Image (cartoon, rainbow over all chains, first blue to last red):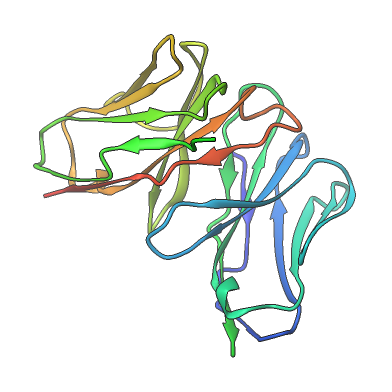
Length: 111
Length: 116
């Protein structure tokens, strides 16, 4: 049974600070890793994808992957109130495998 | 470029009825997968279709089924609805299939199903 673990939060971060979201996964053969943002009542929106060890930056977002530790994280710099949402970590392995999601971390950016 | 389109957006059904949900993927995408989201269980994988063939199926009862047409549009059906089937049903679109490295997966807005 593949598992993806996230701290459910809420994680409260002051506006302008760095928000750090973490995720661990159980299946060592996982190959693709995604962070989705979901606002209440809306569908998940892709924020970042990462496939190899190291950091990947896109604007204010940085995804970090460490396959040896089975750990993936998302950093949000200069956090804005509009970043307040639930962040979902998703993992998939090789072949015809669906996404396995964590339960999500509820992030609150305090003005 | 149009996104993933799901219909209907909202629906209410009675226990025991059946329901069909539709999904049109992003143009050129051949993979469609379906997910169920509930407050208690989170997002769970239902099944994936690629070029009209079911490639994988999650841990759901046989009441949940789907199909994909030659134009890549997909439908999912839930028969003999139960109260616990109330959920947000999400369709995801990708070009090559969920499990392939480098393949980006996009979600539609979802269909909110309430079973009473």
